[in-house]
Length: 114
Length: 114
Image (cartoon, rainbow over all chains, first blue to last red; front, side, top):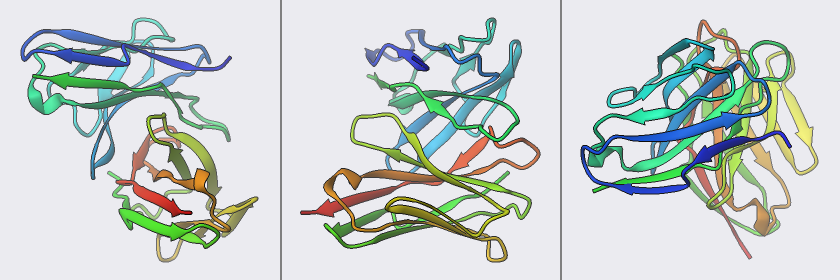
């Protein structure tokens, strides 16, 4: 089954404690991205990757890091989480080029930083 | 980058009536406009999209219209049903990228009143 898998689904952590949210896709998609969803603000892009070892900042990258060592995985790293990073996070993947560039989203990770 | 504005932010419709959600975009070169539906507690999923070579596209009870001159596109849902209750996001591609890099609107929470 084609899917994007994020883990964990829920996470409560304390300010300053490093954490990683994993994302994996099995569709051989080149493009992967991370979004955060906040009430009234929609889906804002944090980072994206066009392919292995190619990553770049989205619209709200401050406080986040990513890596793309393998095509299927795109982890999101918060080196020193702060309360303003409390949010719902989604990973997504899609093809690049062609007629079908549908974005497939993971199940979401609800992060609370206290 | 692309600026996407979406209205209204909330919409309540009597079951059986029609619902319309509107989005405007800023980049006149954009040529692909998807709509995503996010049910409560679920991930966003593509429900319909339109390319700039057509003015309207229909899929059963949902349709999307595009006015390239005015740079706006709309989602129309007819004969609404309770399962149409969800948050809907429009999107447009980011300038200088392909259709994989999307800028999302802020979302519309649609509630169908039984």
